Image (cartoon, rainbow, N blue to C red):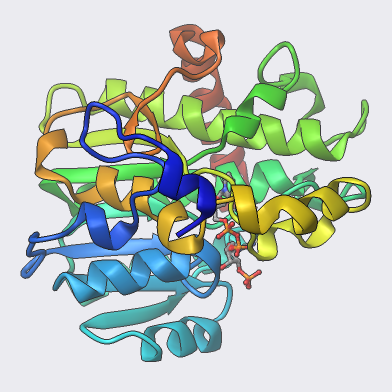
Length: 308
Ligand SMILES: NC(=O)c1ccc[n+]([C@@H]2O[C@H](COP(=O)([O-])OP(=O)(O)OC[C@H]3O[C@@H](n4cnc5c(N)ncnc54)[C@H](OP(=O)(O)O)[C@@H]3O)[C@@H](O)[C@H]2O)c1
């Protein structure tokens, strides 16, 4: 546990900054449930895979390659199914969707965990800025492709970040999704994480007549491979003070595992969580028209990709 985690209090849920994924599932049996986690081979995704399997769920762990997914799944006990899902490659995402359907899994939770952060130079996939494409478009394709597989009480958990506050003032720069009108590593990351939040909100709205839910989370700040592109002075601060202030991966995985599994959250949808409690995102995260526009724009992107 991090030093701060030892000192921090708990919120209304009974959990807080220092709660771990193991803590929030204490006494819970997930036997008979199936759950999917993207980015299961590293960081908080790996811990999410481990704890969901520990509690008895059958966990579909996806990674960019089958080999990475297999290694991650082999490292945890329990029932797992490794699958490839390279989020920047629509063919791989569609292959993953087909494999999940083939496996006949009814999904009780989908944890959209995989992500990349603050690429120093503009990179693109299929003509779109790579963080937007990987973090948002790839997960949009995966989740919308699997909606028919979501169980009656199924939960979609989209791993956003408090960095969604660094998104451009407009929230989403619809005229600059390729980055050609300007690129900033942190603003682009913020935009992709804001897109994660809007996606969860709009999905929740679309699921509102069912008992299925969609929520977004900020996991906390955790030292993982995510910071691989971080440069000085931020990286120096991060490495120096990290061990004192940052969450451990066990604490970092807690919020998404809590939102994916905890009985207290049955029916809770369209919300944003941090430290295993309800949290308040940037005000325009509640802009329903913006969320709908992003959904429709992404649908259009996906349709174009499928046709090409
Ligand atoms: N760590 C933090 O402080 C923090 C804070 C706020 C939010 N988050 C969010 O938490 C999530 C997990 O991050 P983490 O800290 O655990 O980072 P991590 O250790 O770097 O793990 C990220 C995972 O995403 C996978 N991934 C990256 N690009 C992918 C792609 N194109 N297709 C499929 N998978 C891909 C990675 O695969 P490879 O290993 O093959 O690259 C890895 O499995 C991310 O969504 C991140 O934005 C993290």
